[in-house]
Image 1 (cartoon, rainbow, N blue to C red):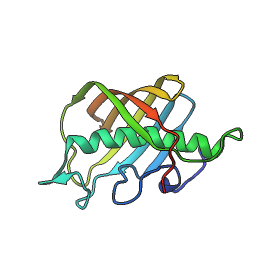
Image 2: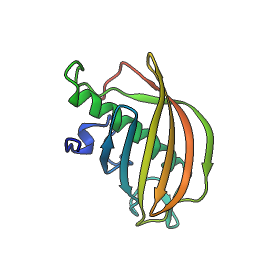
Image 3: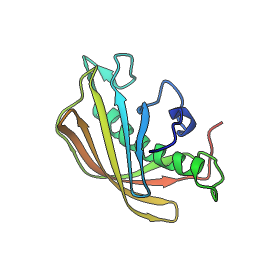
Length: 145
């Protein structure tokens, strides 16, 4: 069981640019979040969330994992740092999520070298996989204002 944090305490993002509702699973290799697609979402149009919203959901799942590590591991500073997507590889978006659907995003941390992390991710709704991809994310030294 993981500690229960408000998602804004784990992310450098602020509303309205939050694309995860809750971190539901964490271990050193895997993080899992849930997110319900709402009509007022910045990436929603004509009843669907655009592909960019899915990519941001995956990236914010990575950020939630990093934030959780910062908040729970004693040797960490507790500071939430800003990360940037450095590369998107092997992306496969099978369909856009509909407004009202709940996304479960699972991210596996394949490799971490200095400030770069390579992850593989799957986004599901119900029992259906709707997107998979690999990302390279760079963690900066910057913290949000």
